[in-house]
Length: 175
Image 1 (cartoon, rainbow, N blue to C red):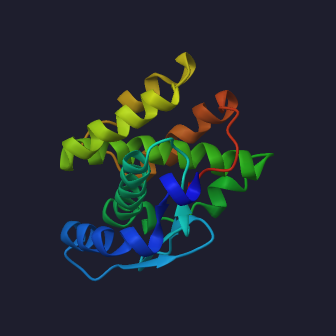
Image 2 (image 1 turned 90 degrees about the horizontal axis):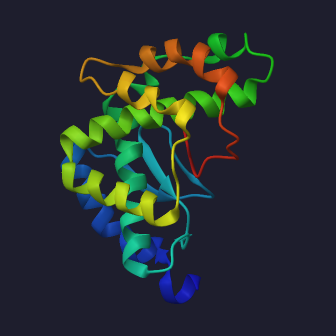
């Protein structure tokens, strides 16, 4: 499956690098890594992304990953140091996963405004994979949808989201 339908870093990196540099207006680097994450100067993608059945969808998934990593650098995810806030929670990993999901919801709203076509593709992939935000989390996207929201709003909402945290595993993209 990975060979036939996966998006291989060496095959998609040039296209995605052009895409992200066009978005950022600066020379972000795109590098191969063990997972999907950013240090705010480089965006790291795994060697192969093969989570979906079709090669085209795996490419769109890579593009969405790059867009979310770019959004972290563009919309201020790294303007704060959440360590002090996260340390007050009994389960720091759960707090970090919850914060990451809140921040992803906020950044998706930014992508919806900046890149509506890609946002629609991201929603299509979510729907096709069966991913649905539970009812008790439906209010969070609405609270993070305003153009005025920033990373401090995600941190503020963490207090109410933490008790209702989704049973999510390790995120496929991390900060």
